[in-house]
Length: 85
Image 1 (cartoon, rainbow, N blue to C red):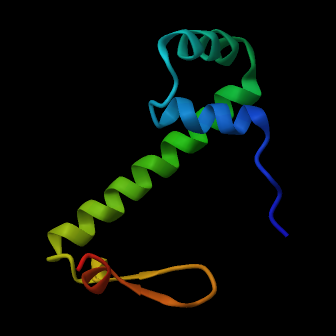
Image 2 (image 1 turned 30 degrees about the vertical axis):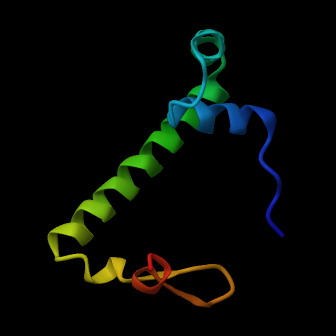
């Protein structure tokens, strides 16, 4: 069973996604520089972000055929075309 993310993991996600306000971002950056575990978390999340961006770019370059259907949890399929109508 998946564990709930820790507060630090949620902060790292918000930092990587650019969702922290200026004050929270500065505070997180100060901690990040001092704490190797936060540094590793940010590096891992940045890697996942790059991987997702590269995958999306690859799909778009192939004409988007893989974007027409997305897999969602539970094994069901989500049809983007029908959801946008």
